Image (tube, helix red, strand yellow):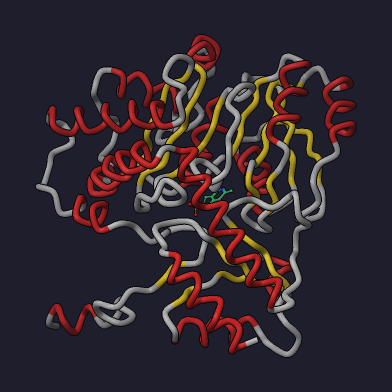
Length: 370
Ligand SMILES: *Cc1c(COP(=O)(O)O)cnc(C)c1O
């Protein structure tokens, strides 16, 4: 089979740009794309050690946490880093408090179950924010809890969970605070004051490509973490940290994704995290003004929405399938709802390198369909 024929299987329209309005992977800049064509590299050579060290440092620099945090890279999607953080951070015989109000909160719960962790769960309907009094009363009663875990931006619905106030509660009761920031880092403001472990990935608001994700953790928590027995070979946080601190790797990394992340971080540092958050907030505002004009109904009330994703109810008489295919024919990929929401909603993310004109064209085409 010729390469040209083969490419028909995965290229939608060769050379044309599809605007990705799904919450990752995102549209990347040409510079980030070009980085993936850098020379072949052996990960056991000093060139890769240098690249890895640069990425680890730039992550901390971008979020201004060099003093207090350290970073660990792991090859795999965001869930790889999430599994690493969850599986490596709970002291034996202690338990985790899991706040679930969407697919990703429930994923933390599932990870606890896979590792046979004892957990307490605050289970809410998707899109319903947690009640602080409920969290406090569990923390007061259950002294076995060592870690409070939550998702910052619950991508299932576009709800931004109250990171700061839950973090303050966790600290008040002396708990470790573990946060899935995968879809909020560089898109919404992440307050690191109370966070002990934060999980992120390259291919959402950092504007890199899938293949590498990371855990940022507080340096002073290392002494506690290294006492925890290994529960996994591939996802052992402190073993990775020990190796990466001396420029070594345990397993073969996704090298092109690292090349891309390095350049994506340069671009983020240049734009600044605050600048990117501002840009995304403006994009979301532009889209939401458009949705309002089209009389579309929001899933999450104002004040609780992230900067990066909007959940909308499907207009009457239009199925998701039809909406998706009409938009795709015009060069836009949207995202369906998950689980029970799959028949009723659609999601529009505004992460990535997307131009104002593209959002404008999207709203116009959406208007002709609705
Ligand atoms: C995208 C995402 C993940 C990870 O999903 P992967 O498919 O493993 O990249 C985890 N949590 C949240 C909140 C996410 O948005």
